[in-house]
Image (cartoon, rainbow, N blue to C red; front, side, top):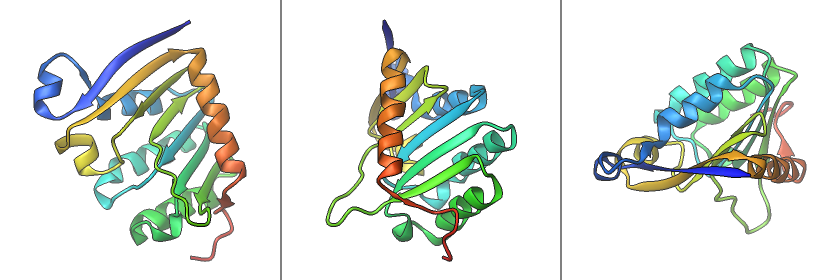
Length: 165
């Protein structure tokens, strides 16, 4: 059984009773005990808070699986931080989705295969604060299925732990 809550960014939508996306993602990362799966189209330098949260999560021994669309095309500061994360922690897997002519446009975070946020928001200032974005918080079995799909994406992507960028 799955429970769904509506999430949003944009002041009008949050005022209408939807929970804001950013604090829910932070809640998932901070509450993870075993693993975090994250898939993202883009991180911008303004999403430094999320990169720091990933580092804090790894410091606690939580296993990370991060799949980013064309990591080599991300902002250099973001790319360097993600690669550093993969090098520093054996339990942090960062992969670049670099399929020929295709994009990974998904945005999702899964905590312990039990709770997940899926939505339209990128890991950017606009995506988390100023754009009008929609998403859902899923509690239940669907989170397990989503983590499994992220594992598939990670296995088909280029691992970044030994990248020389």
